[in-house]
Image (tube, rainbow, N blue to C red; front, side):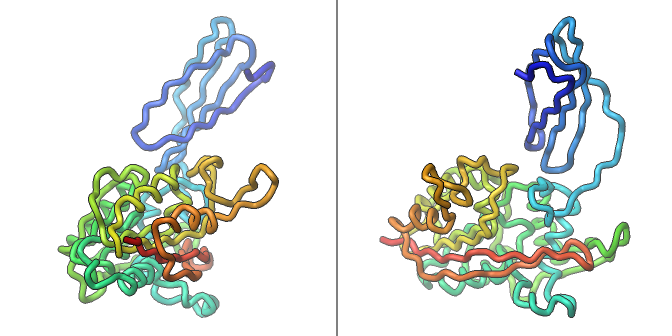
Length: 327
């Protein structure tokens, strides 16, 4: 199907530890094929030669080259298993409590994961504070803050690296890491758990937000900057409808920054056009899904700030909604 092309590049996006089986009919076209396999950890490139006479495809051993691990602030980079991602998120969750003078206008954007948990704590009912699920918990700040109010908190993230970092932080009560200053120059940082937290109330698990399984009924579910990073966002919302008990809350926070790398366009809730050429709003689509089952008790914008290096930050704005499950 590549016609008479003299070369072709294939790109395959895969999760870690994924086996890939594919076939190429190269009998009529290409002398060379380049295959890029993207994982959540790094980009690995394998180059193969097409043997046109037999229609076979063989791989050549790739040259060993160092691949720069991109920052999580680079939209579309699947890097949430990398050590750089862990360091950036430890700083995002625990270390970034004030901004440089030149960014004073963004002072309200710090401590974003904690602030989202505080919102859940505020809107939870006293008789609905047994069990909370923090979906997309990353390195755990929101889960720990939820434990100030809820008797049991389960933090779930797809990234093994994030979950391991959260567990280690929970066990040791502190974490040391490096953050980028400029170029290759890094600065060492140490952060500690905020005071007054009962870490024994929190459990961290690796898991898939689109396939949570049987979690029973919960009193609170938070999903902070998660929805537009899911391959099946509707599946997650349907699970929230099924799992949150009457009177319980869903704190749904998202900048709706849809990307093909995470979600196929036909799964986007918004950010595209309908058949009539009219724009579809993610916010309206979410409301259409949840309104039959929940009351919207609060909606406002929430800023967040992620540091890449000393002179580069990502400032974003998420739509924050608190939904209460009806009887």
